[in-house]
Length: 232
Length: 232
Image 1 (cartoon, rainbow over the protein chains, first blue to last red):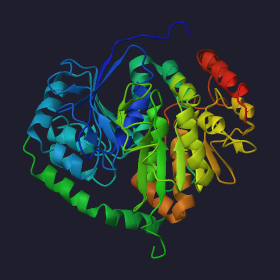
Image 2: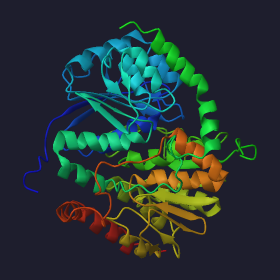
Image 3: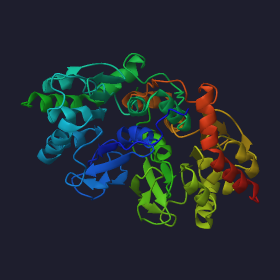
Image 4: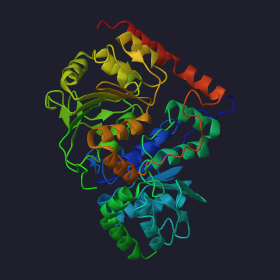
């Protein structure tokens, strides 16, 4: 274990905004939290508390102005209406574009890739998203790709919500190597055992699938409208 | 799908405290968030923001006084030093004991079961915890049990950190049935695919295991001291 780089000094910025899905943020945060010496910045427009789609309120600790300019990782979580608003907000896009241009890794989980796309950061890159809006990424010049974690050069995007754990653990391995990531995995007891097998479009029962496709139809349409109106 | 109970009115109280592991809270919260009509209360001693072990700050929305008295689910997340402090705090224990006596389900993830134990809620019950402190539960009269999710009558406890997703999805099925839970699973794209296989004591490489056992030794000892000093 002597070669494991226990202490490093990565600068990781995680965007937060009203209406985000908090699990999109916390899956990766749980894994990044193991990076001894790294600094994690919870970044928003202001330091006002931000309430998630499910009602959980988080306090940012950095603003678009105070967040370090040169980042190891810049990250965007997803959501539904809140994400569409963030992906239309000029200040948010200016921040993501500025930090994204210089960051070592440009990343997202779930529909957070819509924000990367709207900021012009996915043009020509393979990327993924929540199943409900993955295809919309094409409107931003991206190549929608169906996988749990998609990497194209320094763009690393995760699929929906809970994919943030797989994304986060992959990032830990990328930053610190496999042994460090395995330590993180054991401490987080990440040995998943879902009681059902309905977590993907391939495995979900047909009636469950149809009900959720119907439930997500309005969001899918709005995501497609957003991407279609994008001018890179 | 016509028999799915889309709207119910569960009252779910999730304890938060300084130094908790935020993923312990958010895994279940992510699943509970799908329960249309349910109320989720983020409960602490006061409404002051609470900072997690990894530095994320959350704002409670209820106090021990304002939290409803009769709950469907009462839940405690884990952590390390912060959890040991919460499990020694008379007000926290009085709250958990009072709500726990009358709640339909008494639950935890990770070392949150130390708090249930200290509140006298696991005496005579099978329960689990993070691998580092599971055996300490015996000091509270519990029967330490090695499984991802352990149920004994109305006590439902999850293993370490990320087990909160499996716990939460099991709870959704318990409250609303399997079809509803499968819908939740698909929306959360809970189709885990860890990049490594080091998430449990059974699968982790031997050097990773030893390093993490060593790292957790101090916490294990303190958890055992806490449980040994418990008088039920």
